[in-house]
Length: 141
Image (cartoon, rainbow, N blue to C red):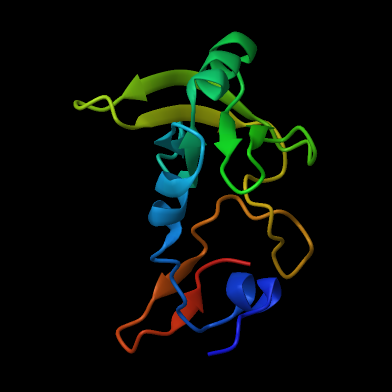
């Protein structure tokens, strides 16, 4: 099977989940836990990433959602490049202390790096749903 382009992956209607992602993360050099960014007002899940100790310390100090990019192996302050920051309201940890939840407020136009049909950043990364036939359908933009 040919590799999908980023455009096909991010905008297409074909389901192509990366079931190997966690194995790749586990094989990487960074000690990380999953981190969910949730809109504190609407409850919508905006984005999911990974956090190491440095990212969590930075987030707590700066008050902005911060991840550890497992693909670039670097600190990723959400919005530093795009201006679409996510201001932290609170940080929660799950019962087993193996994931965190950033409750936040968007301070820009959106949270996703993809754009809708009008060229604006999408509010969050979960803008498609899986239909019963396995295809994807856009739910916004």
